[in-house]
Length: 98
Image 1 (cartoon, rainbow, N blue to C red):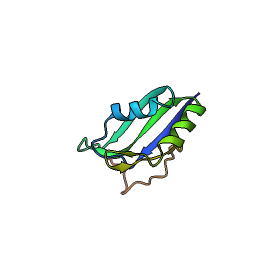
Image 2 (cartoon, rainbow, N blue to C red):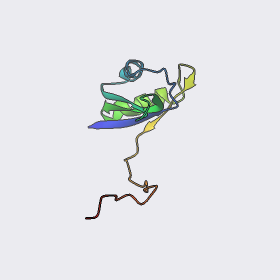
Image 3 (cartoon, one colour):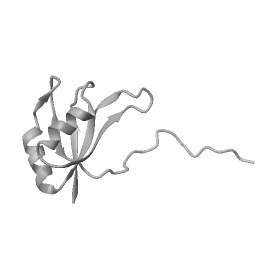
């Protein structure tokens, strides 16, 4: 079963390929996503790796949490399920009344 891993504190210069190479040393990597700013397209400094299986994910987390990459110590842990606890910043809704 696939396991999703959070990777934080990444340098803005870190590439998907670097992350893929790091994690593939510990098991099969199914996907790598580096999160970017919607407006500027610049990396936000974190991303997610999906690995094939709990054992591979646990090995990667143990080996890579705190590992220095591009001058930054990575923060690596199991990704938490996304919760929609964001509240609208203004009324929203919109639309015209006729």
